[in-house]
View 1 (cartoon, rainbow, N blue to C red):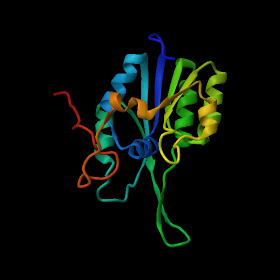
View 2: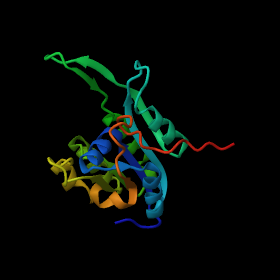
View 3: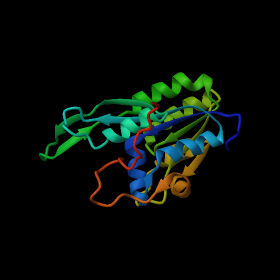
Amino acid sequence: MFYKDDRLALFIDGANLYAAAKSLGFDIDYKLLRQEFERRGKLLRAYYYTALLENEEYSPIRPLVDWLQYNGYALVTKSAKEYTDAVGRRKIKGNMDIELTVDAMELAQRMDHAVLFSGDGDFRPLVEALQRQGVRVSVVSTTRSQPPMIADELRRQADNFIELDALRDVIGRPPREVSAPPRELAQPEPVRET
């Protein structure tokens, strides 16, 4: 499904990919992920979308965000909204669907193949719109979790479904111990040119 002369773009729904990998029992090595898709075609952009809690003294995702910025990813962030639900539980809302959709549509005329790392069924219309513009779309998620992390309608719309668990040996590593910081932190230190 991948051709060496394909102009590729990666669209990573950070929270969704993190949840899918966690459900499969491994962490994503973002350096290896980028290398894998550079090998599969001509990588134009690798976007990573996440919401950040700006009012927290320490954000557990900040080291990952910093590492990604220094290592070739286009970071798209926004402030997460914190609220209390009807039962009094603290909830955080930080949906990045619109930002991802706008970026994908803006890049559509310059790419041959979009790789969407998300199982969110809300992206089905985006996949369909990209296909109408001649872009092939691969979706990376998992059916091997309980329940499956990919919406059936998204999987059916995609040109190609890539099972995340099948990429484990290529882009994964064992999860950090419980004492490690939470979320998507298992990343090497940023490499800075001196």
